[in-house]
Length: 187
Image (cartoon, rainbow, N blue to C red; front, side):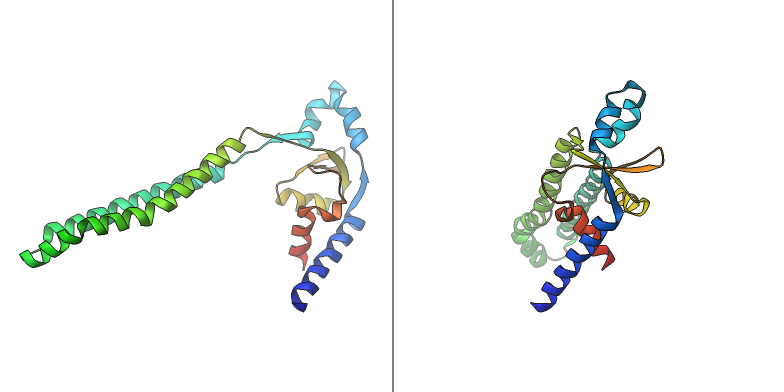
């Protein structure tokens, strides 16, 4: 218990250090004004909103589903080959008696996982067209900008300023999950 409390405290302290030293100032008003100007609007939209792109995850899941379906079909083929190759009547009769049970077991082994993966694909596809909007904009250090980008955050270099499009608001930045993730990596 003491170890987990110490680890949590270390993460909180590291997150506070990141916020204190790597986040410079709020520039939400500036970005809002620049976006309203046609000259900067297209360039800054990258840090104001973006669409979720789950295409890689969807493709990986679909590949995994195909692999599982192939494995299921192979298992069924192996079972059918075993039945067909039974030499003596006793083995063949015994195998046929359990054929339906084995077939059901194969179906249960694969179908639950395949259904779960198909559900995950559906969820990712439904998120695909949902925009993520930045609610605040902050000027951050280049180090933090790289870390935020690694975690899929909206970040851009605008006139040598690293702008982070924060998608949450109403709580201290130190409480953001992304800050906890970055702090945890540093511990």
